[in-house]
Length: 230
Image (cartoon, rainbow, N blue to C red; front, side, top):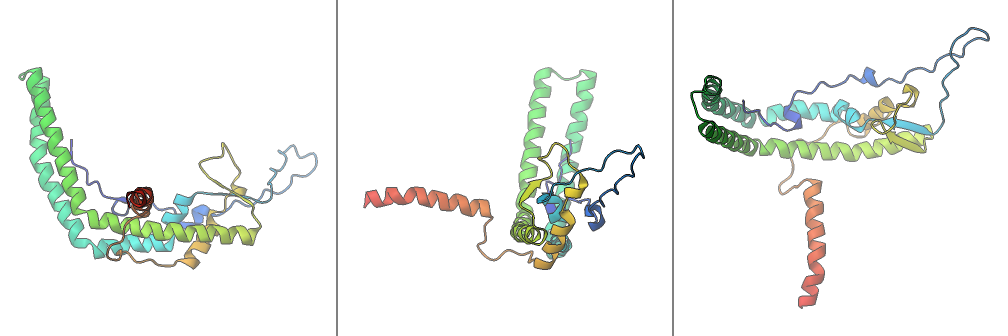
């Protein structure tokens, strides 16, 4: 049992798909009469299929932010990695001893259970410590992702307008679809134009959208009660 780094998205190595991976397949040529080939696949107009996550991680803004963050938060990431190694050095011998005693039967079940709980508690504490050390990195990731998601929405609308599309579906929803419907490449091109780069350091006091919305909802609920109290 090793402590994983629990790094947020930007600190995890991503296998980013190249832009070419989003290229739409060219429609098949119509078969000649009597050729015995399958009939051409019908493509309904006005429909597009998009994988939002694939487009976002392939965007220039997101990819540049990934690289820039490693520089801006280099010290925090290095300190967290050094601490992770220290914690693993403390926990690994305990795990090895536990497994050895478990195999040999030299320890009682109660003793093994107590030690397992102790090891798990140390692991959990270590993970929390590492997450605290990497909190600035996590805030940076949330800030960047929010900016790119907002720009993605604009890029999607622009693509729909240019192509005359009236229905967009996420790639996860359809049971099956032809690649002729996939518009990832077109949306990616729009996204790169709209948002070529983003800032990786959040402004002072910035909070992720989910936290802002939760705070606003709580404030809205407490407002009537405050008015009644007055």
